[in-house]
Image (cartoon, rainbow, N blue to C red; front, side, top):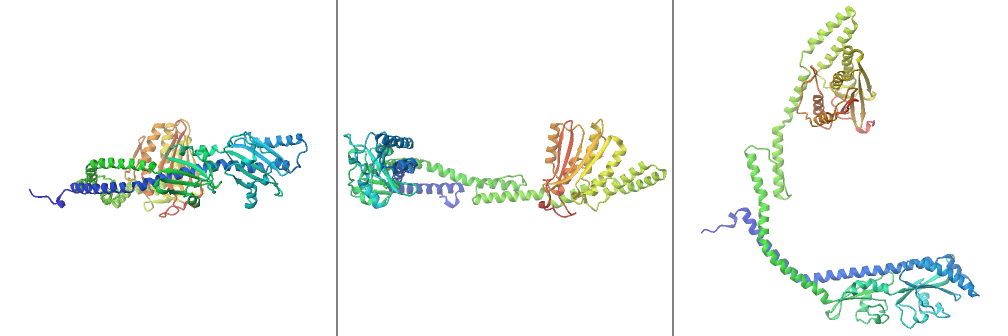
Length: 615
């Protein structure tokens, strides 16, 4: 059996073999790469996650302590407290307790929402001490804060506020058991002069630190603790280590780095740490290596299962990929065959933007343009429409009628019948206006004169039953419009108005400019149009095309250019955005509105809309 060469295979089979090979190679490379680098990748991700958790815990602790610092600042600026501290030492117990009640009330209300605060002490330079809080600890008798180590540190550093890693055990009356506290100390200065008048000591419960670190300490493979910059343990899950020195050999390197993570000696695990911006303390999270390796091993097992699954799916994927790529080519070939047979009604949409998609799109555009050229020969269509328009204006011999009317007019004047003379003159002007074929565009005032002549004849015919009213803006009279656009609307209003109104038929003709367009409205007081019929008429006018001309329309036995024909002429000359709309209310009359572009010369373009004053 003769072997088939690769180049002779069908396109779909070529793609199938190529994709199958590529998928298998890529899958093996990914598997090897994943197995090789998974440990480092997972380790980095987990350590980053733990570091982010450590950072969030630090922010939570900072927020609690910062809230206490903000309240402390407000209390130290309180005028009442500053006034009490500047007084001489009370000579009587009554005076002391009065001040004590005052200060205690301020402290209780200020720290009411700070649940981490155990006790607050306000110390004056005159030896008076005022206390508040839920902790029963009391300062020793004759306590002098100026002799404490932290006060000396504040004097040397020039700081007004310090956060102590513990509390001054020697300054309190002990109850026999150690307290889990740390203190915030703050100088109190007179607001105006800045003179130092006392200090505030705020004792906070260390349990708030444990509560924040609980999410980490609940994991048997992790341990979170807090140390200060002197390596002193501020918080430890095992309380016996609180207050002791943290003796890990790498602790100095951790404190110098500030934030990050570091591998512990001997590969036992990692130190993840974050330094507080408020306290300067470092949250240290000790992570055992087996915690990280558990995740690595789970990933390796998962990759092995995925590799086996991908091996099974590779054939299916390659087959579908080859079919998805070759099918657009097959569809394009089929559509090209249809066009070859003379069927241009094809619509093949490109589903992608690749070479095949662009080729499909180009073919679709080519077929569309060819079809458009075949179905819509533009120039011949224009000539045909112009011929149709001229035919509408030349269906009778106007010159013969015009000359006959002139003869009748002269005979009427000789006989003294003025009404017949007026009618003849008006009708002759109408014919003269209609047969002037050299001008497609006329000034608006000429169209209005033509309408007046038409209405004169109608008023002679119907007498007092017909009334007409004109409202034409002066600025519109010199604008150009297509001849015989408004008169068919007036004729339509007269015919239907006379038919449907028992009393006087009133026709209003209004022309104005608005929104950069010229509007002509013809309103009558007839019976109006039913809502369903009105919607049908407007929809018909909206969808009408300038390609479909209606030469004649019947109105009770007479013949005139209808609304649809006028609408088609407007769209032919100016585009589909212009035309006729009808508004009507049953029993209240009808308004036919004509929307045209503003033309300030016979063959010119539209007037700049910026110069058109809105109505």
